[in-house]
Length: 100
Length: 175
Image (cartoon, rainbow over all chains, first blue to last red; front, side, top):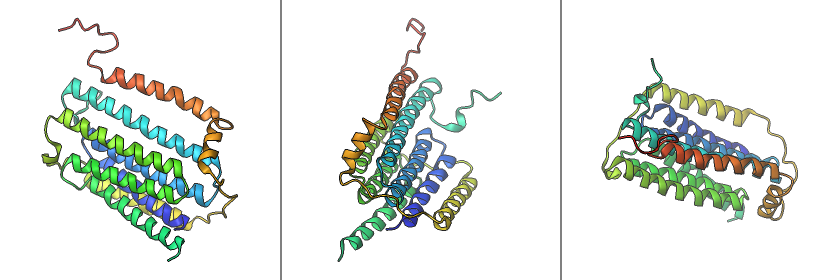
């Protein structure tokens, strides 16, 4: 296990998440893609912390990323609920209220 | 076998599981299975964090994501009104462009990971990294926690306001 291999796995996770976030139509599936991208970021930060500078600052940064993920999840669920209540669907392609 | 070899084997096993489970999220034909695949991917990354000496954060990632995926499964059953395990789905758009973006991102990030001359490790980890993290968040890095706290409260308020049936100025007297 070296830094490069950890970053390669993190890059693969990020790439899979990017594919999902761009290709999925259901809001919850888009959120899953975003979660996978953040999963890759968490892994990359963990690897950089351990192999480059294992001091508490890196851990605090990692804690902030984990907190950001919870915020993304909570707001994503809230927006999906609102979409479902207002329009009766949960697809990104059908959420076109702002299109003229 | 040496402990380093075991750690290497565990890392590669968890890395392969994390990526394959992540890919399975968008390949399996039901949202329930996709949720479990995502949970498996997060658990594998949490185990890698444990291997990297992050005892506290690795455990937090595993526990938090298992709970989060359980919530997500309940959410799907609640809002889709059906057994999500029986729901076939292939709802994608811009499929080729998305594959191209994913492959391009992997090549770019992978090239960066392999070609950047990473510096030598600076310093050594604390004997107890969890205690060091606790002291940092309650001491030198307290501002970070002070900033995160109102963000969390705002998230709770915004989440409730958005998802309530009744809006902020709606008194519930409308038909």
